[in-house]
Every structure is written in structure tokens, then in C-alpha cells.
Length: 251
Image 1 (tube, rainbow, N blue to C red):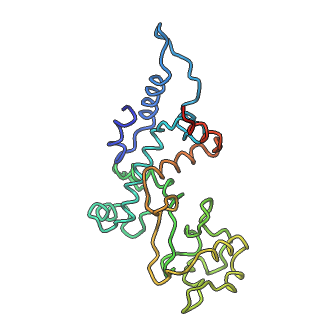
Image 2: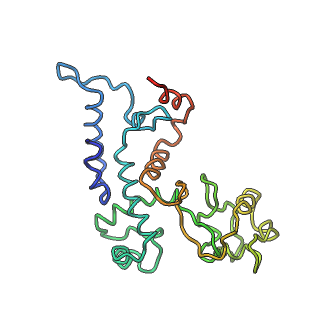
Image 3: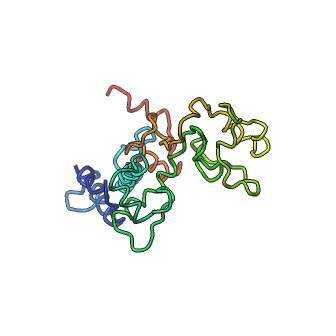
């Protein structure tokens, strides 16, 4: 109940760190209990590990700050997927009239709502990539469009005067295939492999942004929260097959 009550506010506002910490201390105290004489009981495991997923040895409790970011990421995704909505047009006119939502700046004297939504930028930047259509919207460098989850950007440095090169320029004119000779002139082996593994079946359509960490390519709070936890834990806790077997036991 205590984890569910703030969810409505967290969908629009970023809770202050001190408030989130206070709520989590209350949850921590409730979970571990207290001594009969009113003293503090022993916390047998750090709260960050209790909040980790079950498959990595945690109990799957919500980390309020990361869940807050995941909820705000849902709002940010709506700005990308439905830019013609009235609320999106209002924010665009005020905060990024001549630019793109993903590259929007916080600005001077921002409203609390905009500051909250803007705070989820790191989360979405990790999971959003371009799905290639005709390649006319995607700049080759500094845009996430490769399929490798750990790094969806080109690693090879751009040649002089090619920083605005488009993905469309890497295709054979009039054909749905990559210009392999050009790829070998511009990129290292890693980049070439990543590019050639991308099919160009739907290259007649426009390029669209997708959420890489979801099967249906649409952002969900669940997938956003998982990514936020992975970022915060920073591979401190690795997934182990033994935990899955333990939770699957019929006990």
C-alpha cells in the first residue's frame, strides 16, 4: 500500500530525493520490524538489494526514485509518440520551439512539471533508437540506430564534412541494400557488422523512434523501471540461474 499510494503523483511530478528517502525509510522499518522495547531491529540486507528483482537475489520491492523516473518516462514517451496532442504542442512552443523533444534543454526558470518530465531524459536516451525506414531522418553519427543494446551509436569517428551524413546515404541508390564498399571506407569492423545486420525490407516507410527494450517496441513503465534499476545497480548484482530455480520451487 505504501508503495502504491504515491504512484499517482509520481506520474507527473518528480519527488524530492529527501521525500523519497523518507518514504523508503518508513518502508524499510515496516519490513524489518522493530524490537519490543521500541528499538530498531537489524536490517539484514541493504534496501537497494531488497528492491532488486527476484532473479538477481532481491525481493522485487519498488525503488521509489527509479519507479518515479519510469513513470515520468511514460509521459516523455507520449511527447515523442503523439507530438500533435495539445499538451505536446504547448510544451514545444514554450521549451523547444525550434528543436527536437529529445534534445530539449531544461531552460531558465522551468516549471516543476517540465523539470520533472525532463529529468527522465537519461532513462529514455538509454532505450530509444531509430527504426530505419527510408533513412532520411537519421544522422549517421550521434544518433542511436544500431541494434546493439549496449551501444546503439556508431563508434567510428566521422570524416571531415560528413557529420550531417544521413543513413539514406549509406544505401545503394534505388535498391534496398547497404552500399558495402562505402561502409568499408567509413567504419570499423564492429560498425560494419552492426549495420549489415539491419534488414532494409521496410525502407520505403519513414524512420520512426522505438523503445528498444520492449518486444512491441513501445515504452512501458515496467520496462523503463527495469532499465532504471539496471543503471542504478550498475551490474553490481548479476542475474543467476539459481535464484530462478529457488523461486520456482513448489514450497
